[in-house]
Length: 252
Image (cartoon, rainbow, N blue to C red; front, side, top):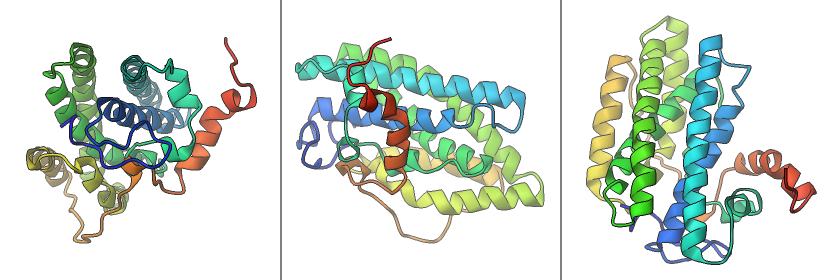
């Protein structure tokens, strides 16, 4: 999958070749960085103290994966770019994350449904990449796989709890599924059909147990892998990058 996941990147992206390994690393790193930033917004705002700690720790897991992937991408690229260069010094059009991860948190059900969709995808991704010939990437993927399995268990449990809970929690969870389903196809652009099949089985079982329905709407949004993002990424980057943008080269 790592060789075929990306479509042509916009001008200014690392490389326009969809099979370029540096571009693939950056795209996966971008996914994890952006979802980490989104989860960080829940700290001190989660519905209970235990969950407040959990989402913070999960955000750090994603951030750690992003840092490792950016570092490896910089080494392969050979242009001296660091993880800070990739994360803090690129404009919106150079980010290659999928649209799903940049969507606002919404209520807690939206965050957990987004997490379910993304975590189910990452479990299969890291399982695949843990066997790649790139030993550094294989090591990163192997560690990330252990974390992704926990993340999937966490989000699955919450989606079931919310979907199979009160009328109010069920309604909110179904609204989240309806709103976020349109961003799922992009996860599998240029990937083999087997990825989507496995993902649909895992996600479908969770949604069935949660008494939630997959929407009939066939519309799917795409473009993130080519640098074309929703209106939500720009404000997120502005908040995340303001220190480095205001004080270039700042070091702790």
